[in-house]
Length: 220
Image (cartoon, rainbow, N blue to C red; front, side, top):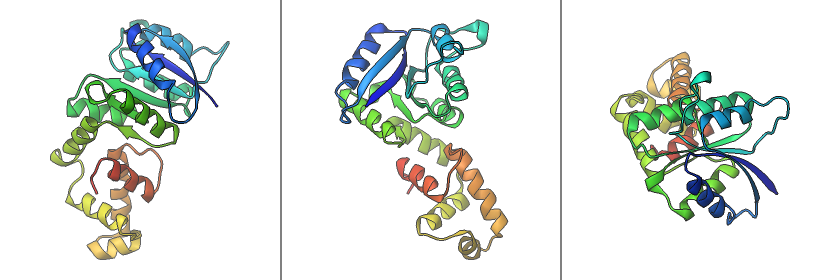
């Protein structure tokens, strides 16, 4: 199986290291990489319509030399551009930032398949993230999970009503039963579930997707 990866990082030695590690993936996947060292190079590859290439994975750093002519200021902007041109392509973002508000904004805005704090992982951790994303799962390193969980709870983005709804969903209850149990209308439960999905960064999905994300963040 051939897996095409676009790697974007302004440190060539980092890219060489990532490429070498991913060759040892547990899926026996052959890796073919295209590398860029700044936003401008990546922009032209992503938007190339005369000779388009669709990548299976975009692997990029958050902090990159910008391409101000096109208002591409960071890896986040490149990730959003990639989502626009290649909606099926998976995205793994790396960052040195561990601030909760930055990490939450990345998850909420970009919705990457993987988000890794550079100080959180080694070679084995990178392979674990790659395997998870290839299998269709979401992968966040420990600091990301804890920071997002802290922000969701401490900032009241998921209040006690939301958390009770999540608990009842985990127990297998449907909207009608949840509404009766909580003495709320079914419309209120539906609106709350939509809000929960939005807060968790779930674009489309069902109850199982809510539970999957909550388990990933260790909210349940």
